[in-house]
Image 1 (cartoon, each protein chain N blue to C red):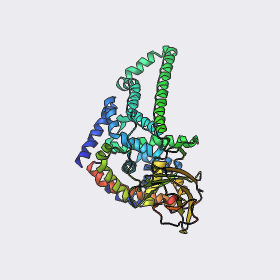
Image 2: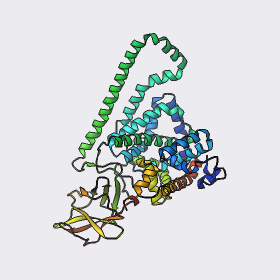
Image 3: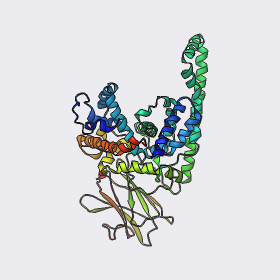
Length: 200
Length: 273
């Protein structure tokens, strides 16, 4: 979609303004990606206060490092998602290290989402805006087998290393490594047309 | 770089694999899933290999598909303002060091004699900022807690770590939905049902786990309230292995084996089998 490509260019311009210290641009970037950022953080941390903290940390990092963003190395959306995930992983790991017992509320969503019902918290605006792009990304994910998707989710959302995944699944490390490689390659191939159109 | 430029890399068997010895590990690196020792070697290679760096970049970008696959949630009100306020706090030193860095350094050097005073001043500013951050954090925590408390009556706070296995039980009719959270490390399964009418008098709902032998194991019974909601905790050993979980309607007290057809069924991920 050309609109996505245009959005991508606009995002790059936003980051350039943020790099120059333009707070309004930071606000605009937040408006574009807050739902994505908060959704990822919440999926990983499952706690509103922690998810807020991770998103706050991520945007603080974006504010400090936007001038280092290199559009030739990937889209703004992917960059933002990567930073949010890193900050959420930091919290997840420190939480594990401290062996903090967390309480969670049951209306949270786990990481197996294929069968998940529509989330009533989903806003119509957010739905409409990104529905098509998400559908394409979703189709790419759907090209993976269940076990392939599972290893990626354990690495991405839970922050497990390959040997931790192997231990967790009770499978040989070699099998897990092959699965990670194949799954990532499949995902990349499936997204290649989007990347070439500049939609990613 | 498009993958077509390096089609060999996909198979990890390219002719120049001797100069790119880490092809097999690039995908895991892009996911941050390499074990630490492996990551160290690869990092050194990446520093001097633009081709492998480009590979990692496209692989990492592909993970955005995972990020967008989670259910969408609106960020809490007030978060935007907190983020912008934090950015404003940080702005002045940032611009100073960026715009006139040389002049700034020179000025700083000339102020070295006043270091004692400067340090005190800096300290108190840092204190102030720390205090503001703490207040903002406490604020955000308080807001989040307030929201949580509002729904506490209908939702049970439950100890759940990030490694909890979870599945959704779907019914053929659209209405009821049910979610299972299985914390295998703690041997706890939390059952959360919505829009499921209460069982009729003298009846109960029973949850089953079905393993490789196809024999249903009763995990516990539960009932929903007038609103159709239930949140129940059951002790389920983390050593158990289930492929499927199902819910049936049973006589009060439950049955040793299901006596009716399951009306909610879900498949556990591989890890639980």
